[in-house]
Image (cartoon, rainbow, N blue to C red):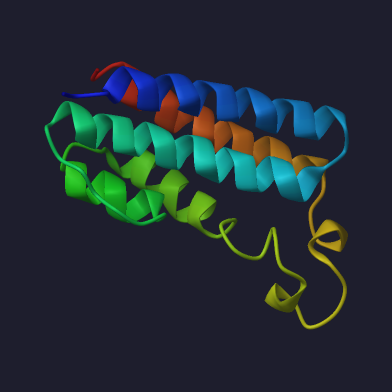
Length: 124
């Protein structure tokens, strides 16, 4: 049973969560949620192809799908940078993740995730 609709619905919800994080000034969380939204969308695309891929890399997932244009792959590369350092203090030499992310970065991450969701939506 293919469940791409469930994967994609959850990706949309996660992207909305990222937008709420921006409003609350939780910029590191917004970046991570944007990465998660794109990851879920990429997995929805693969699910629609009858494939299940593991791992968090949006870039690798979109490459596996074989249909992503260069701009979606570039957005995925940026989002993959937010998978670990947005959550763990040891991702930086000092301070906590909240010290390293701002509104501009979070809005960029949400924009990249939205572009990937738009790409996937057109193919589901």
